[in-house]
View 1 (cartoon, one colour):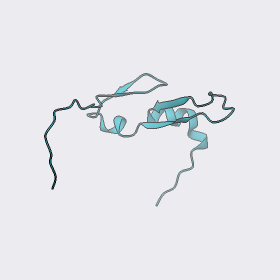
View 2 (cartoon, helix red, strand yellow):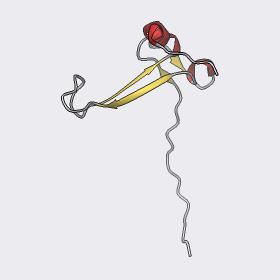
View 3 (tube, helix red, strand yellow):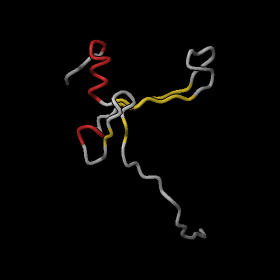
View 4 (tube, one colour):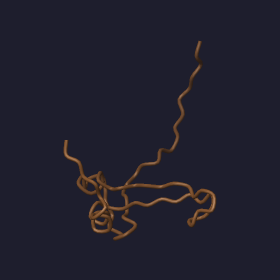
Length: 78
């Protein structure tokens, strides 16, 4: 038998994402920008130039991504 109860707890809601390169803010209403953000992150490994065990992240809009990495993007069409 389960015994449960209801709780009211705060919920974190994402209002916007800001591009770390151009500082443009994208909201969920801006479908072409918000949902095309590139969000990457990781943790620096042993002897990392970022720092051992340092957690890092980057949010970059699609325009800045193509401006910076366009020549390196490998595109495939299905």
